[in-house]
Length: 292
Image 1 (cartoon, rainbow, N blue to C red):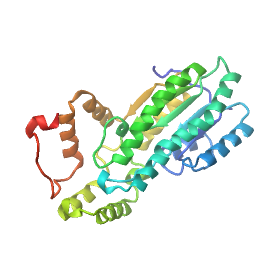
Image 2: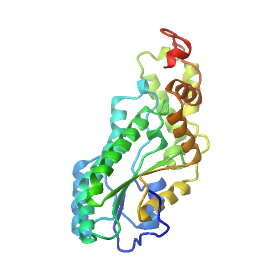
Image 3: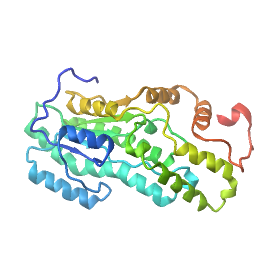
Image 4: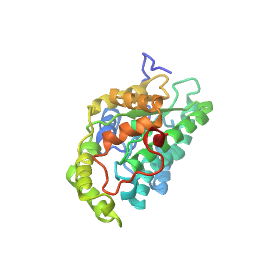
């Protein structure tokens, strides 16, 4: 479904946006309305927020924009279970909590506007939810899961007049991606130092990976590109089901869709992993067949 040339007039409509401290959510909120902060990973807090929406917005909720997200972790074996849980709590469970709590307010909007503009849930995932990047397993896992959840909820809620749209950006120069470079490097080194068998990687490999993981991704976008896509989706008469933002993201998803896994794996490893661990081995099938 494409974006209609005409826009939904937002005056008088309620829009809730999560993750507004910085980045996409902050700029989008400034362009739309001021909102209250809450911990989306706290189900009790989200339920209390939903009750406040019910009491203060009898007209119902037009749009929920799930933007809250964190970018944390590194290699799977370097990332603690608690770090994984934190990423999933915010990126996945936070969106789930908000949708679960606020769908009743969106259904109330539909009942009061049965032939009017369709309310919508807009979830920001990432191209990392369509194409896995090595060394970002916590983040990719959370975004893949949010993609699946969004698809399921979209199909379920369509009958009740509620739309669900996905925005899938390539990396943009937001504080989450380019901020706190020094502390990110220290966190990666701390994870490595805590490994029981860190000699398997070797100091040379670790130094190269710290340099790689603290370097901003190539072909980063200006955040305004994503913000414009968000505003268009919020204002569209009929929003697209999903929208990749950024040419690099389109190419990456195309690579994953067309190339066999043995080839895409090799490309991604060469692009995102610096060098070879000291303890790397070759066993089993070698050559092309080992990647099938």
